[in-house]
Length: 314
Image: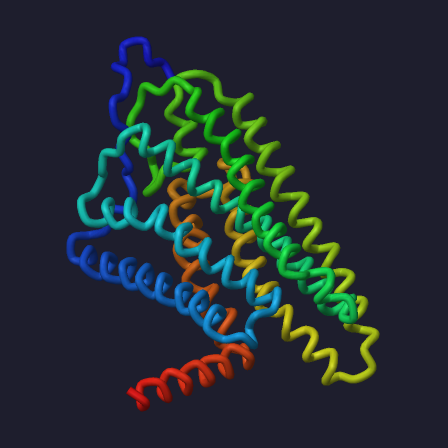
């Protein structure tokens, strides 16, 4: 892009979505409803795990950690999404834009690592059941969760610094939040080298983690197939089905945006695909982890009974 006669931008402008005037209230209500339900669902899981001692296992510790992450993850992008739906193209300060970029990718990368840790937890639970509680003791699980957060926020710093170092002279970001590819299109210099570095960072960070998940589930599959009865195999698979569904949703949509070449996608499809992993995946996660989970249903009954007993005593 030739920017010799352009003025350096003071603000970016998020183009976002511009629904028809008649559909605007419906879209606004839909996005806001999903956001509030996502907050309620993930907070419900966090509170339930803390309130019920039976759920004090490593698996539910990581599920509640994931729910805590999802609360912040969806809150990073929904405010600007709502703003663009309500007001149309909306200005955003560069500092705010790059802060959003950093936090969004930090939380996204942290979720990738956390999904890998959760696969490791399932591997130990099924393949090393006698040593499971010693391998995933209280201190170990805290260190694994903390390592996921540190790794995610560290890798995202590299991505953000590379993007923020670019000179920009155009202002309209063809997205509803500040993401890597839409921002790099606004630079007036050749960004091929930056794209390769960022692609390598994301590819190594997420690709290695995804391969680890596949290897762990390969080991789980071999162990499950050796179980003597169909009932025991079904029970073992049921403890992994929720995690596998979440991994497929998250990685599938993320790969469609960050791995598929831009020329292989229709114009504007990035925004639609991004809705899956920024809005719908955080919304579906609490449902996936609770709807078919008998332990969670029983925990709800126990907590509700204790609460009702306390209220009656008052």
